[in-house]
Image 1 (cartoon, rainbow, N blue to C red):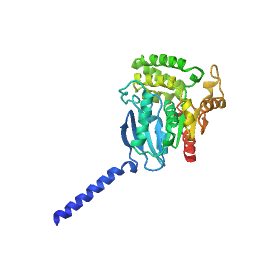
Image 2: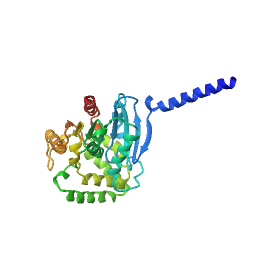
Image 3: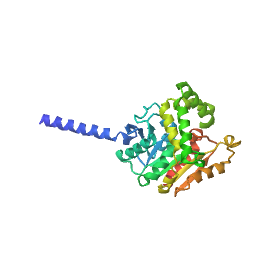
Image 4: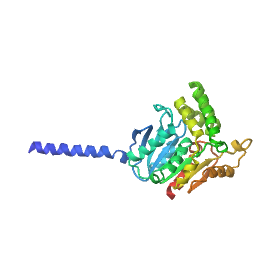
Length: 306
């Protein structure tokens, strides 16, 4: 009888431990893993799922404030693409966007994520729009944060010209030394990424810890692609966030008002049945870093509408 008593107690503890282990993600502790070429972190324990996809050379650090806000009422998956933010480059060096797309699909299926909202920045936004065109039935909506179905300006040239331009740009980037890559990351963040020079100095080294060759390959694929035809099948709510910083658009060759830039973005999304564009100013490309409060308000309003 004594042995039976202890056996039952041990069995009870085993069930309790197993139950707690299974409940850890639900209790708000991040669950980490990898699916295909994506690494993911899970945050939050209830609510509609949101998948956050960073842009070129980005990682979960891009979404730090966003995660802190969203995890209160959402289950959040923050992903990193292979080759970015210190993650090893993918073994297969071509078709990186195809691999990312397939891995995103596998993440949703393997983690049993019910109709998530995709939120992507830059290249991640392009991936979100592409995915919405291919798998609209699997998601509730998509948000592209300064990410477009075709690279800005590339809508004015044909596919052959886009490919040639993309190959040249990719080759130049791939030839950079580590020092040149770091300098380019700083220059980009100072002049395109964010308004505050201190933010640029802080975040540039995080961009620069990505793999040079992988970054070049992703960039070239992004520049060569045109996903506008796919948007005809993207029958889900789509939000495009257009950052605007007046000094960047006050002189040739750009010279666009805030309304004109938003209208240009709207035109690139014309094939999407339920797309809308919201402008946030003053902000540069990393709008979630320049204007975290405004960004979270716009994103939160979109999620509530769903």
